[in-house]
Image (cartoon, rainbow, N blue to C red; front, top):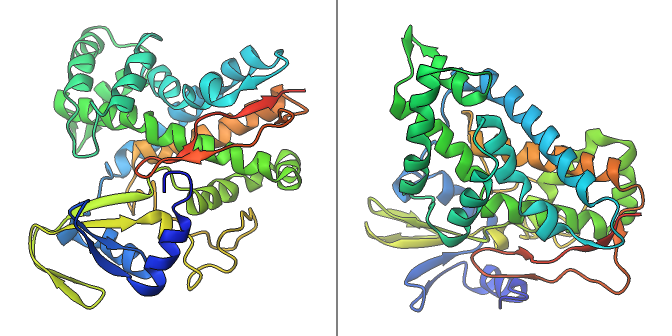
Length: 339
């Protein structure tokens, strides 16, 4: 299952679109339409995680500048090697390092953020005590001695005439740093693997970088970094014709939904020209989400930097990526030749 869950996903979609898994203690939901509806249902804990339009114009330029700079440094550092593992040397570091750079935090904090996210100390349920403890002293220092970094800009930001509170600034920064964690790093690894597996499409992206957003969305559809998204019903809800009580846990199989043939033609194929990838991961909804913005920029700026620094980027001889994992899935090694 960890190596190839897709045959099971196919069986679930065709025969058991909603079924109780006693081992997981959850109801498994596997078809695209059902998963999409469940993720959008407020009774299943789906909430708008955005932070409002006031932060978009401020944060996006700072994030892009930091992602471009960080990706360039990382790519140049490894470009002269004969072979390199892009996971260990690039994709595992870029998101966290870019977030830390944008906020103007010390470089060594990137390693701490990455480790906290990897070990689960920073969780999607909002438990971010470590990040809060890390950020509070920096927020206090920026209040007293503002600089040119994003954290200083957030401290100066006014909404309805009022300066953002320390809690609000910390929450925005936490969201950004959490976005630099394992999920984004895994998504970036799968994105690079998909393009390296399809040299003709990689060559097209090299000469037509405007194709990168579509290539990124298609990778999220085909190989989501979090194939299983757990939700708990806060009220009775009906799914797939079955009534579930409040408190029921629903496992939204995003990995199955993204390969539902009733929604996508030839769903196992990676195609950067797919008209509507309609992935169900890293979605911010109608409002701005710093973590989602960071993920997209890490993919775009990271790929651009690698292609610029590595003109002959390709798989190392004999190497094939091996995605694995059920709850968090991606290749754990990407061995390439830069030239």
